[in-house]
Length: 210
Ligand code: AMP
Image 1 (cartoon, helix red, strand yellow):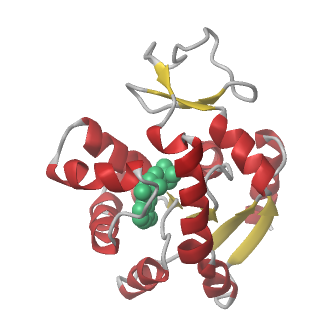
Image 2 (cartoon, protein in one colour; image 1 turned 30 degrees about the horizontal axis):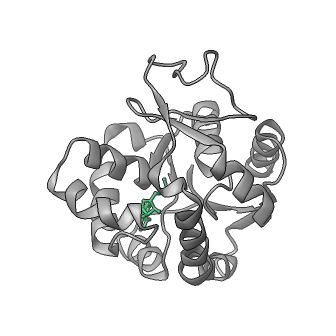
């Protein structure tokens, strides 16, 4: 089963991708996480992407497609995968089709702006392993410390209020048109993602098994 998780920043794509990937033994692929890792390791790609990501803009389509092509050739994708946060532009969606990458279903996370702002402003990530928390909804056992690896929890640079606004506007202009694109393929399943993680995740499972 090959899936795309589509939705605004803060819609819950990443958290649900982890849960659904575990439940159905799929590889969970986040281009954002791959790019953050490249920035941390100071690779050529990371150096080029850093300023773009910090500004809340989109990394060039050809960089994203190169990441996806390489990642999908990994053996852990054989049983299926979830593309979390990719495609984000019509060009990326068309390139995925042109590469012959089969997509079975596209989950569209519908979320209100208030919820997005609350989620992003309260989000904390581990500086070492990238695990995601929230100061109210997904607390770590010890404040400021990652449960998984003991790393320090920080605020993502692109979760600052000004950058959040830019990311929302980029979503409206560049990514939202993908809802129509996938609606036409008959693969789109829209879910209300304003709810708590467990409820959203259950709704996704039900939709996938239908
Ligand atoms: P995310 O973790 O999905 O919120 O992604 C963080 C940032 O990485 C985004 O704001 C973009 O700057 C960049 N990024 C991630 N995925 C893509 C993509 N598919 N296309 C372009 N830029 C991306």
